[in-house]
Length: 565
Image 1: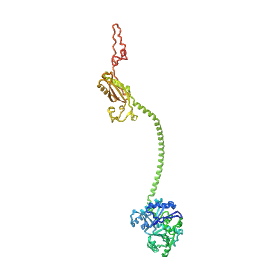
Image 2: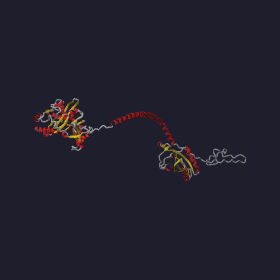
Image 3: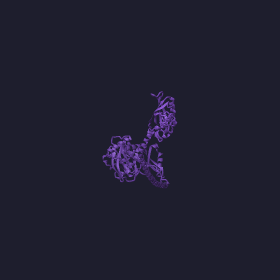
Image 4: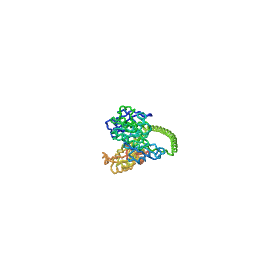
């Protein structure tokens, strides 16, 4: 319960028989309460910890000066729509902006035959409610209810009468006034059974003297009587305030025409004896709110859960129910069918996973063979058909006069092609040719198998006339087995006469052996004539060592005597 001097806290255990009041705790004397909600909550958390009070749901009293009460008349409406009707009527009398306030109301029973209804409407500033939320959050507490103090005072009065802590009125259901005072003012509340038809703030000036207080109470009684002429207040119940040891109940009794009874709201608390007797009345709001919560789970006014419109049951409720039932049945059948499909698919997935495992095993087992095949491809990529190359060169060589050009050296050197650059078409790179590569340096072309250099051929020649070398190079360049051809002079050779030594370097392209289809066309020498006969009739003696002359067409080393055609 927010008090002008701080916070007042009461803790209790709620049960069917009411409340078991445990502890009451007042804000430390002389310590001003912080104005910031978060700081106030943090300090409250410290005080509760020092008092060994465990966290629990929080019920907050709403002071009279923090709210606006209106007695609103409205036309009858269905219960589900009543909150809208009450709000619409209440807005007509509201000065503040609708978006800045919260509203809750309590219906007032209407007399039989009345054409309209009444309700007590309570308005609360949204910012104040937000500050309460921040305070509770900082204190580690959950806000469960925010209720006007007047309803808490009414519940405290009913508890005091029920527990014999207060003198009962002569008529149990007659309206009574409950006066709760502090040294800074108080509240005047009329309780009529379970209703609170009237509440009014008592100013601070009214508690400065006896005459001022008596005048304030009489004015409040007169104002109530004006509004409710048929139900006069039967008694005044006073919760004694902290007023420097002075008691008001006795003094008011001598001046008021109705009985005045004091009562102690902290009766039954475990530490009530530790409190000054005159300050116990300050706890009427906190204790009364606990008592109201024990009377009913639903408080008369609660801004945490205010009354709101409820959707009316649809006329097609039965149809909707049947539709929902049919939907549930359809979902059940579909779920069963889906389960069967899922089960079949799970079996199929298991089978496919088993096949995948077997295939993965076969792949792993084939990896060594794959590596061996790659090695074979690498070997074949570097293979050079030297006999075929030499044969083709010999086919072209006779076009040159042997006296003018001779081949004195033939050598090949493999060019290794990276395995990563070989494609499915065979060993060798598949990317673009580098500038100046085979076939005239086609830099943007894709290498075909026949365009992949696999070796480098070197020919060393003795050449008398450079034109003959050019002619020989042109002839070789037309061969599909060769790529780029370069030549260089190596110098003269001793004993070679006027001939110069040249070195030709050729890129050898990879071609299958079946593509070497050139045929060396050579004329066999004519059959030699018989040897002449001497006069004696004997054949002439042949030269015992005619020698081997490959450039003499009249000599056949495989048929020296000319007997074999």
